[in-house]
Image 1: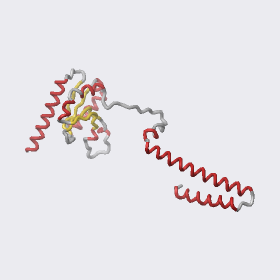
Image 2: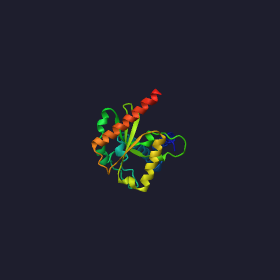
Image 3: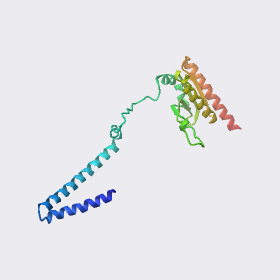
Image 4: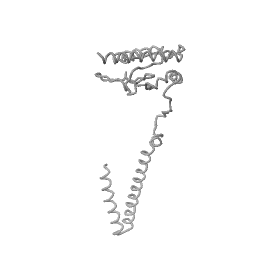
Length: 206
C-alpha cells in the first residue's frame, strides 16, 4: 500500500478514535477509541525510528550492511598485489618519473568489445600497465608464476594474448622462475617502451 494511502487511513482512524472518546456511550466505545489512538501512536513511533535507521544507514554504509549476509559468506581485505608482484614492481617503479604504473589492470577497462553478447573474456586482470602522463596505455606486463603452467591457465593466457594482439596492445611477459634482477627487468621494459614510442612517432610522421 502506498505511503499516501496509509497516511490518509491513519487520519481517518484518528478522527474516528477521537470521536469515540468524545461521544462514547459505553466503555466499549472508550476502549476502542483508546486502542485506535494507541495504535496510531505506535505507528508514528515506528515511522520515526525507521527514518532514523535509514539516516544511520546512509551516513555509515559500512556499518549498516555488515550484518545483512545470510549465506555465511565472509569478505576480507585483500592486498592489490601479491608479495611477488610487489617485489617485482620495486624493480621498475623508478619509471614513475616518466610514466604511470598501475597494478591489476582489468581488460574491460582498456578494451571495448564490439559485437557479441558476452564480455566475460574481458573480466581478467593483467599484473601491470604502464601509461604515459596523460593515462594513455603504452604497455602491459604479466608476471607468470607456477600457476600459469596449468592447462586452464595456459588456455586463459592464450585468450588474453589474442585479445591484446587484436587490440594492438603490447604485452611483456616475465617468469618468476628466472632471477629477474632489477637491471634486467628495467632494461627490458625500457627498451620495449622506447620501441613503442618510436613506432608511434613513425606512424604520426607517415
